[in-house]
Amino acid sequence: MIKRVKELRPEAEIASARFRDFLEKFESEINRGISTLCVLSIINTYGDEGIYGYKILKELEEKTNDMLIIEEGTLYPLLRKLEKRDGLIDSTKKIVEGRARKYYVMNENGRKIYNHISGYYTKLTEAISSLIDVNVTLKDKYFYCPNCANKIDLSDENVYYCEICGYNLQDIRDRRLEK
Image (cartoon, rainbow, N blue to C red; front, side, top):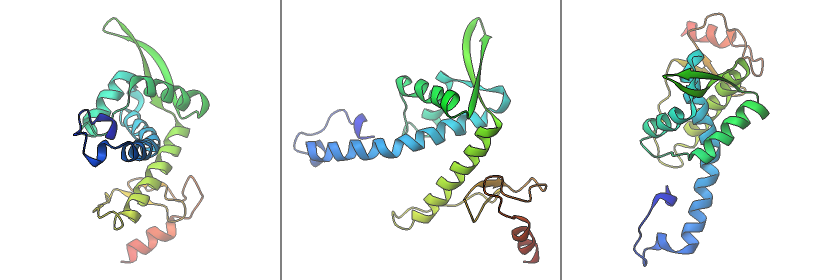
């Protein structure tokens, strides 16, 4: 955000080196993890169909109202890391409309990790919301493991344990039914 401020009044506090340096570092630290989470979220949305890199960039800009913008020089190394080092996504080359593109899909390990980190981030945002004066409303569709914050889809009745930490979810379901 601060990097996108093109013209500042020279006397404005935000134009000072001290402010800009702090804000650029702060935004960079926050955006690093959030960028990974958002890229995984977009890839997950496209399921087995997959999505190519440039479209990920456009989806990210659209879904975040141009608030979170990742440059191509950042996205492609991130995608390589998620595929090669972390093993969370797979890629296949496809020719669509005469153009060769690399499509990315989330694999099973990636889905597990994505559910955990999105659950953790969601619960963390909810927990700190009162500190930063933000109202957070969670979707009722998901349950968050009380032990590890893994996001669990409640529509799947056959899930009895958290696949990340092994927490017994049946006790919680039983308590919900009693209410």
